[in-house]
Amino acid sequence: MSYQTIKVRFQEPICFLQFHRPEANNTINDQLVEESLQVMERCEESITVLVLEGLPEAFCLGADFQAIHDKKVNGERDGQGPEPLYDLWMRMTTGPYITLSHVRGKVNAGGVGFVAASDIVLADQTAQFSLSELLFGLFPACVLPFLIRRIGFQKAHYLTLMTRPIQVQQAYAWGLVDAYDEESGSLLRKHLLRLRCLSKKGIMRYKRYMGGMYESLLHSKSLALAANREVFSDPANLQGISRYVETGRFPWET
View 1 (cartoon, rainbow, N blue to C red):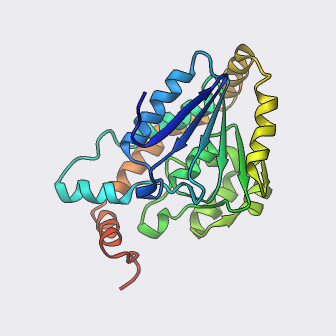
View 2 (view 1 turned 45 degrees about the horizontal axis):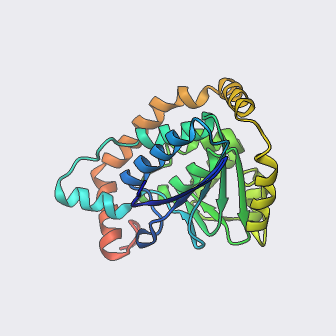
């Protein structure tokens, strides 16, 4: 199949899904979410490991502000809203395959959601992670249930409030990254050699069991979606996003 925002290759029993929007700094739009969900559906039957990758400079930088700005200018509605993205992360967390994020470069906002929803996170020395939403009057409502599950409330709280990036060493100490190396390609190959030995049935049963232990993700969904819709419908926040897209100036800059 042909995709516009991702690149996909299958090396049974592994699927490699690469976010590929170099013209938009690997940000998330509706099409990227839809295409990623399509791939995950294809992986249900026989794939045991789903590897997510980005570009060398940017794994994923969160919401596409340009797309949000264009919709505002054209008077368009926000499509399906945040629910498909939350469902995508739920599928990563509970689906019948191991999800592995191979991170290089910057990860911001919704990109952290992909990382937090992964079973395993590998990174190289260039990886850095941030939640910048509060700078625009937003907050990472849909990211936080997954992030808190992975690194705990206070670390997720601190990362949200400070808005500045943490380097890979800090992310590893906090448990956001499971392993890192200067040459992460070799690290990825070593992990896949081991993971490909696991059976599909064994992975399916284990992920179902673990998903049942952490039902908070499902319980948090309605609260997260409502909060996301609130901040992304606030006229002042949308104006701040538009000004940033048009001028490059942050909301607090006069």
